[in-house]
Length: 216
Length: 216
Image (cartoon, rainbow over all chains, first blue to last red; front, side):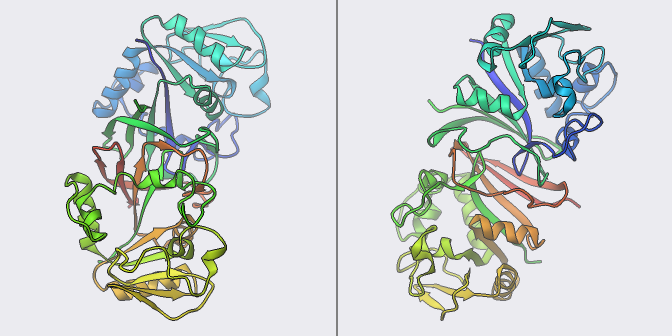
């Protein structure tokens, strides 16, 4: 059964991006530190058109994701590169370059209707009917494989509140960012909600890769 | 070298207590769920004067803490039982009963001076000069053993901001509380600060016991 999985890196103090994003620093101040664990990996390097890189439990985890997942849902900021006046640019090509690393259908939640954008092996489809509609379209595109909800925080929270996530894979980074965009604002749950931790993979970088699903 | 360690259970969405604490529910709504992993353990039961209980990696971790730590620092709410009109009661005996489970010196940070309170094998000393002073007194009392900063969040944040923590042991509970008291409010770090994850113990309950210290 295909699953809808939130997959996101988060600092120990709960942030998925730093404050004050710019086009040069779309993840906000310090936000790139959240992803340092991934950059050296062979899987990451390959996806970005480079050879070499490390293989370890982290790259195995990343390979598993690439194998199991066949569509991505993201917010318009993640598409265009952080918050800013450019995020609503109807001609934005995004900040993922000419050959984005997804190489499967990506559904961008936005208020601005536009035609699909094909870049390399990735097609970005712009969905104006909200997160749930984007997830439905992504499920249809993914067939019997999984859908990844990649962020940002607003999209993750909407999917969580709507009960549309089957699971979460959080990469808990040993880092205090101090400020930025919180993954879990208050009221992602209306009442205490138990989850089940189905996996805890310890990275050589100190990241804890934690997989959760709803408690049975 | 004796260490000062924050040791606290926190929900996946970052809360160390639920909202609206009362004397009957001093951890706030749902807050007791944060500690469910500990209740069945042999170490916990013994500390609360009962026999039996489970032994597993969780109880080993708890035993280790009991062995290595010789003094505790806490806030007045943790002493008296959550936030409320009773927290500043100068005659409060706390909500830890006649034989509190600490059995070593406890230093309570408060604005209200009062004489030490001896209950069973635990002496509560009330410190009006702030968190750093309480940590200093606890260090002196603990000798070559460690000091545990037990919470609540305000005390933890003050100790962290003051650079007075050598490490943190977080028990990350697979639970969305939805609301309550955040462990990490914004600005616990003024700039991004890397930590080192020195241990990641996976509990059979799905709790991730994560130990951090400052990066070298």
